[in-house]
Image (cartoon, rainbow, N blue to C red; front, side, top):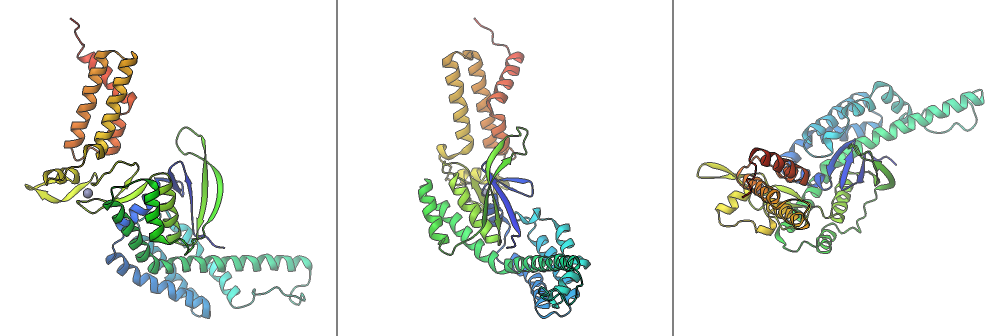
Length: 377
Ligand SMILES: [Zn+2]
């Protein structure tokens, strides 16, 4: 069986060709970069060239020309889909190499029947050794043909399956955006309804220890999954994401998808809104606030992180591990970061998270206290 895609699911992430993304990123990138009209239209020309390649193999006609066009069409397809994961991660040179002159001549030998069956009575070979080497060649030709056929089929299928899978994932993200119930059982039941998994997907799963590429060098339990189609990858990613509490939503203001990694209800993304307010570009959150629909305090991810940090500072003060003066300064600095986050559109959630880590806040506090020492009465 030929599996053109293969990913490792481990550590709340998906690893593809050594690239790490948070689980659910592939669904979100499909939602963000697939344009139901434009992308589909652009995929049409390469699709016909790829079909022509398949037909040339079937009928053993104009194989070289058709396959060199089909190879170019696959590379065009990758260009068109370059923002959608994992297409950017696919190795273009490997695809070019699959259509090398030597591979195509192997394929031609195979389809013209010379290597099509095992010669039962040794008529063309005089010794066992020659027969064995002929068999290896046969096997190689058969494998090469299967591989090229598999590649062409995979890319030809995309034309048909991308609009369908996009529509389904978009529908589910839209439903998730409109419900206030975010327990995993409920999210799962919606996904089951949408995907009706009796139309089974059959990826190939192997359990594998996965060594993280980050510095800790630890082994994590992981799953290596191979896929026959792009849809299989997307459906698998969605369900694996739901299992760890990740899911896609659409922003109420700009309609762009964003990835949720916790249960706090969050209606707006952290990007810029398409609307102008008094001639100024605002973030979606600010825009919603200006228009009378602010995020609930408990749903704003910046406020949630800030609240957690100030609670930890209070706990440490009560335990006596930090002084009341130090706690007061640390709280002040935490609040300053929140103000910055709520007013500066460029201050990203990931940067904010880093700035609010215990070590970072306490280092900043120590420096602050060195500069502005507390004068005790
Ligand atoms: Zn938005």
